[in-house]
Length: 350
Image (cartoon, rainbow, N blue to C red; front, top):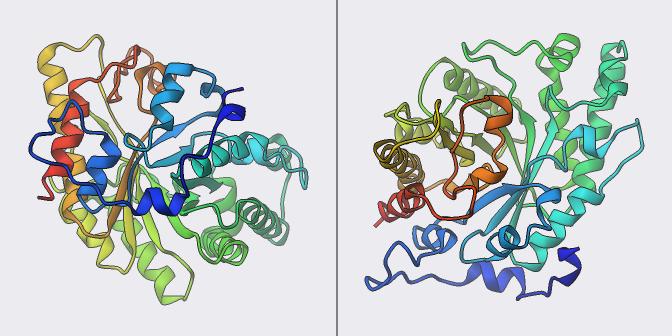
């Protein structure tokens, strides 16, 4: 197991606090993406990963490099199905592997996620719950998983994807039984479990302005007014080549004006049809530059995370057959033009 061979590189504090000087002599082919992010005064450039990818040696070597990635998000290992397959029976081993990697290589760690409508075990979905019963389940689960990694997380996606694209509430087990009350219940439980982790609500299709982003802003306002702990909005940014919103910076600024930070949490930019031609790859480069550049320009956009960094492990082909090639590295772990778009985006800070 590769993790058993990990050696501490340095304390997380010393690695994360180092300053980065990107001189004019360094071209985009040699700049690590985390170095580029730090040069732009961001906390990190990061990636999602899965525990079952860590034995891929070439992949692991890139993942482990602090110059390339300064933050990790477990794509699956901390979701409900993986962490509490039976009520009160918690299985943390998969998440612990990624947490260990983050700690030993000096990376920030993002918890993902506490309450989502997907990847739920049968004991949750096959039970008819009363509102008080389900409220207890939400609080117990959130408290226990956040408390297990207490002190190790920069942030947690406490609530994941609460809205439909038209801005209405998604009708899930949580909403249908508890209404919107499940959100403050989860956030309060997470804050109690780890007072220092940043608590986020994470959502897709809120990269630019629109009804879904408007509903998220209203939710943040309402939570703030009610004294519910909320620290950030996760803008997933699953996008399509050539269709990236034009008002990303404006949208991010509207979020931070509400008193929260923002992060790009699940970035990828997919092609509907494959294979892409050179024109398409150059458009993808521009799209990555646009999204990253918007974050670079907004002070309280703390960092950018891609939803795995190589097409080899992208989620998209399995969900949208015939589509993909959405990541900055190709299937063979070679940099694509998108990589250099990310560098250019961070350079917009200067």
